[in-house]
Image (cartoon, one colour):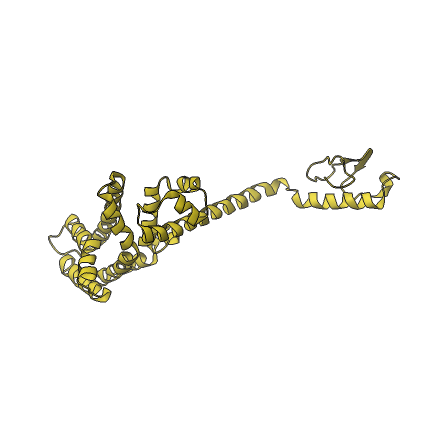
Length: 280
């Protein structure tokens, strides 16, 4: 409470309204304008200044009825932006720790400390440690948390595949996404495979990730079928299985990790194989 002020009474400013203030034992009634000394001879210049300052502050806080929805939308948008940034911070911290320490070696307190948030914040955002891990994998596959929030068909690389009319070029563009996906998500998925053997929850998470991959590659096979470019006699289901198997992390690791193929050689082989199996 400011010096010389006992009670501040009044609400947001409205045309035609008066406010009443009591400074010590002095009642002052003022209208919409600034206070002046004619209201009471005992009002000093200092008190007049005090009231002017408080009115100015109240004016800044005042919200007219037409502004209420705008203020609420602004606050809601700002809260959503802050929540989204917090989730991105958590994903970045979790991705770093999962890659460095593995799934089992990354505790929730460690995750919270690295992200600079409370443990409860992580649970509210992702449900569980396994849910957080899946979100980290999704972000790695998409090429970042921001892209992971976009529908798959709107991501630039996939949109280019959809918009391409030549089936061989479509396959070439699709295969071009695979080395980066394996490079970003491979360390996470290898850790998950190792831990899932003894943890049923992680086993279910692995199955969920693979089911999502199968569904996505099935959509690509369906796109080829809709345009009449699948090899005669090849069903969409068979085409999906071929894409799912040949684009798997296991095949990538056999050739790139175990046999030391370059990514360029792997990509060229995968493109030629899928073209031969799907459209020729």
